[in-house]
Length: 257
Ligand code: NDP
Image 1 (tube, rainbow, N blue to C red):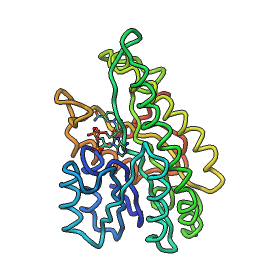
Image 2: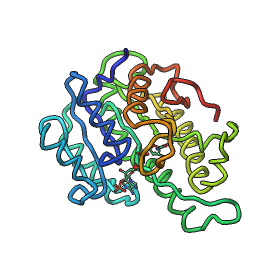
Image 3: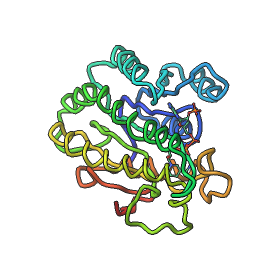
């Protein structure tokens, strides 16, 4: 099985849900690494499980405050991470944090549409911008041709709800319209960023985790976080330039834009 061997990894929204599960599973593989586990309220009650993990693995996990909605917080986090990164740079950036908002054409609130676009599209764009210099350092330092997550990569955790061509199996897209529109924007960001990052050999792609039991996915979801993240890490570990600018799910199946 392909493994994620990236040395320096940063993940947003690492305090719960799929982000936290990703940190847990990254700890299980034996490759030497450092994880910058970011969240918006490191000292708050929702980050207790992450703090506990960091206490157990102080040399592997550094918790960093990063509020995706706040450009200053993104800049400050990048400065902090930059000061802690060695000459190897940042190998893997996982844009995982997101919010969901429900609504249809009739019921979607303007405020929800603005908020989902802010958190799910603008935030990740600013994060890529602020962390690009460290990804470029990692790409140069690797000394190997081609693309991989162990060299330098941006993985955008998106959703099939943002696909414009896949028919919704359970009408989920139309009932979470603000979220779906924001994820479609996030998918566009992925394609455009992939174009810009190509020259630096930084891999960029979108990944759908499946429908998973988390606060966002809800209780009816068929997948457990463990299975989804196992699949996503398998996919991430196997990526090459062939998947650059692509959209896959946690099983490795291509999703139409
Ligand atoms: P959860 O709701 O369980 O977790 C969301 C995470 O995002 C939390 O850590 C939350 O932090 C964080 N977050 C939200 N807003 C911000 C912010 N402004 N700044 C920093 N962190 C923030 O969701 P999931 O774990 O299920 O979702 C993870 C990713 O997977 C998302 O991108 C989602 O769209 C995607 N996805 C999930 C599916 C599912 O079925 N679960 C299906 C398809 C895609 P806090 O605790 O502070 O709120």
